[in-house]
Image (cartoon, rainbow, N blue to C red; front, side):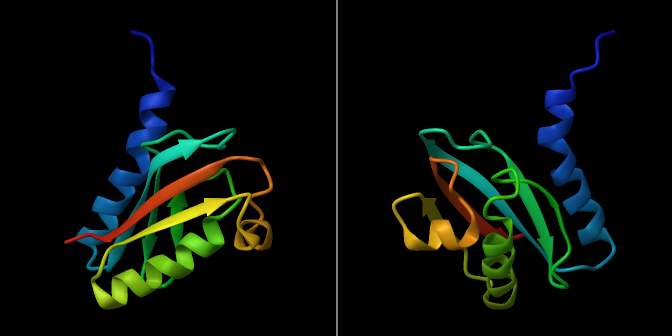
Length: 112
């Protein structure tokens, strides 16, 4: 049977998030909901973050993970989900390193 590594990549952060929740950790999940141009990760990509700032997965191949983790910590604390947008047109995009030319929308929500 052929092993589909793409499926594993998509599913893996969700399995990690489930494990973290079971251990009693507060967890947020960031999901790429929309991309334009040369976005580094496709829609549906996940990044899971716990209240300590540990994270697993990727929403941008490393470009904006730091900013997403920071926002996720606030989402964990407040319980309020938020939509983030990163793009080359934004100064923040350059600051966080999204110089790859694309734009991405990331939805961050607290689990549980």
